Length: 292
Ligand SMILES: Cc1cc2nc3c(=O)[nH]c(=O)nc-3n(C[C@H](O)[C@H](O)[C@H](O)COP(=O)(O)OP(=O)(O)OC[C@H]3O[C@@H](n4cnc5c(N)ncnc54)[C@H](O)[C@@H]3O)c2cc1C
Image (cartoon, rainbow, N blue to C red):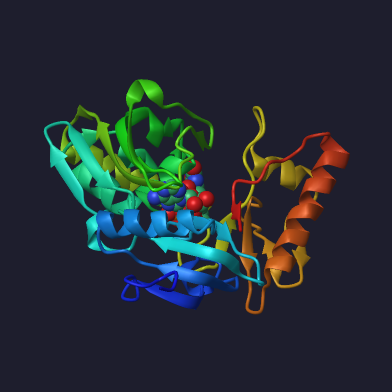
């Protein structure tokens, strides 16, 4: 029996990962799986765990930098409809880990549930957003979570209730392999008022960040009271380029990957910014982008 016997319909070998990321950079995954049900996902994770092989989970790939030499072991992708459901009941929304944050925001606004409108225009999945406690204008996704179902690295399902979870700036206690779903609770407000608010926020955000067809990443976490963008600008680095990767003029915390950009270009630019900000401002910037 081979490692993937019984899973041939959902596992591919040596799958290029670049097309699954916004940056379009990176090598192949030794194994890449798109399970269609929770049961399949659990059985697959158990198989790889028993064989001592590493397993990672990729969301929408909006903030991932993948090395050119690729990834050993298994990369999971929750692209099947089973992981992308969004259900509304009264003032709660239950969303799958693979559901798009944009659909979640649109659903909440349509249903007159206030909060998620602040996250309009941020790309990614619910799982990715919970993993990093995605936030904007002082509102973070973790603050609305009531419970979350996760899958750990041994292949066991666990449910966390609100009191057992913690969320802080770009960080959450949900560090297991996969966030499968979460239930959120909101206050009510008129859908019309929320729609107007969302539209205004969307115009501001669209003007502030690279267009969705640009290969861009959100690179550093803010530090203390200062934004990473300001620290990079103060270090005189706006527009700096290494190879085919460039610091965005509009907002220097976005790095833009041009045609031919490599993970090495990206990492050299990250190192350059960290060194310059450390030398000039004595601040150690932490990366927000996931580097595989
Ligand atoms: C243009 C742009 C603007 C942005 N603006 C903001 C902003 O204003 N505020 C903000 O907070 N963030 C911002 N971000 C970052 C954004 O929050 C992340 O890109 C997004 O949350 C990542 O989600 P994803 O599904 O694409 O995850 P991926 O990029 O695929 O993965 C990122 C990490 O999340 C983990 N992950 C993904 N899904 C799951 C899951 N189901 N279970 C467990 N772990 C998972 C992965 O293992 C990986 O470690 C921005 C990014 C971009 C590119």
